Length: 179
Image (tube, rainbow, N blue to C red; front, side, top):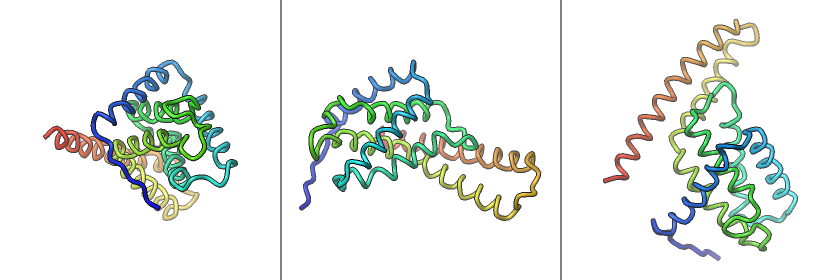
C-alpha cells in the first residue's frame, strides 16, 4: 500500500521552525553529547524491530550523516555542522512534533526532518563521498609507508577543492530556488 502526501511550503515551515528550535539548543550543547545521543537513539530504534520501512530506509542515511560529521579528515564547515547537529537534536528528542512512542507513525516527523537535511546537504554529501573515495584510492595506491605529511597535504588539498565545489553548487541551488 502506498500513501503519499505533499508538503507545501507552509507545511515545511512547521518543520523548519522546529528545526530552528533545535539549532538554538545546539549552540549550547556539546557536540560529542549530541553524537552520543543520536547513536543511542539509533541503537534503541534498531532494537525495536520490526521497524516501519520508511524509518529503516533512513537509518543508513542518518549513519552517513554522522560519519560525515565525525570524520576528522573532512572538517565539515561550521554552518553544515550546526545544521546536522540540529537535525540530530531533533531526531533524538522523543517529545518532538509527533512523540516517538506512537506506534508506526511516531518517527514520521523525524523522517521528514532527515529528508529536509539530506536535501539541503545534497552537495555537501556528494563532496564528502568524493572525498572518501579519493582518500580510499590514495591510501590503496600509496600503501602504509606513505609519509604522513604528504598524505595530510594531499587530503587537505582535495578537501579544499571539494569544499569550494560544494559551496558553489549550494549557492547556485539557493539562487535557482529563489527564482
